[in-house]
Length: 564
View (tube, helix red, strand yellow):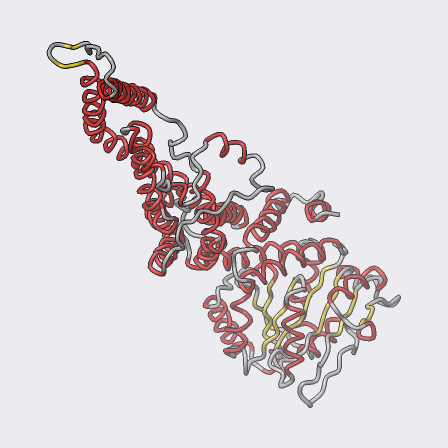
């Protein structure tokens, strides 16, 4: 059975408690814990986890029984009061302190139906008693369903007794604090216990026991002072009454209060609601204003991208792209007689193992998880660059943590650094896969290259023509006249024109090639920075935003938990 079903069953037919709201608060608390468990310190969530577990267990047990504990210090007369309310001598009373070492339970009604509840509370079977008698059954009928516990002394010299008291106080439905005229102002009682119950005023009663030792006037004075102390503890409105185990008439008011509690069958639910209030107050320190997620991208990603770009070697790749453009342009448009020399030089991009084949990159993309992209030959980031990346990563976490409570700062810092070890490989892959815009050869390169070949062919033809003429004359063969263009022989024009125009064309194109190389560098740098920025978002910003998303969900859940 789910927690929601348990609560609904417990509240069925009762219009004095907002069942739906209580269900929503408990479910919201579970959502809060589910979201914050990975991020907040365990110590901050112990109380909430304990409450969720205890709420489910208590509501699964009998709703027809109300567990009321008598708690007090040594000598306050708890055991005597316990026996007087039961009208039986069940709990030992003596001079030796502490007298009560374990909790005793008195059940009004069948013990069998209360046993599962007592098992959960942790009362030993031999310390369970039944308040059933054929002689006075009618007199006790108003308390049927009451499970009254006599707890050990909370100030016992036995540490085990104090721990047992603390454990039981977290489980019972209602607490009756028993104080005596001598120690009703004890600081341990007020500071360590009563003030912790300020969220449980509707399930708390304080009795001034042993009031038979005081005169009526003194009793009124002490009660007035006790109420003042309770007001200071945040327990305004908590019933405070005088009792005495020796005078049955002085138990009537307390007995009437217990009868009212038993009749309402609301103590366990009120205790649960009070526990939710207390836990919500404790958790409130972990939640503050909304997280400004947009500020991460706008204010810090640029700084992070700059650091990652330097670490990934983006400036070196951009410079290599400029050099590769110039190298390839000259190899395609330069004078053919020196192209061979240019081609002997290594391409700057290929020297870095950076492919410029766009089709190759696109084909490798779908299988990137099966076939890793080859690593580049870029140098590893130096110490200064690694330090800059670390500072930028911490800046992302610090920026995200600025508007929210400090308790989230460690989680944000851990998230920002969670993939720091994978960043170098991710950056290298991003650089290797980036299309640098060098996969296509510009059309004008081909046109100029053809023109250069035509000029070279013209020069070769002219040279051959001239050599043939010299050979004819050397052999004494009949010479032939060379055609002329103006006053210049055509072979000479072809030779000189081809050589001069080819060299002149190469010189004229050099500024154009340099301008294109600079454009290629800017384009490559922009694309590389975009790729590097995406890596930063995925490996640094995304984990941080995941924590911020958890914070937002926790904030929403806690708003429901704190609703009244």
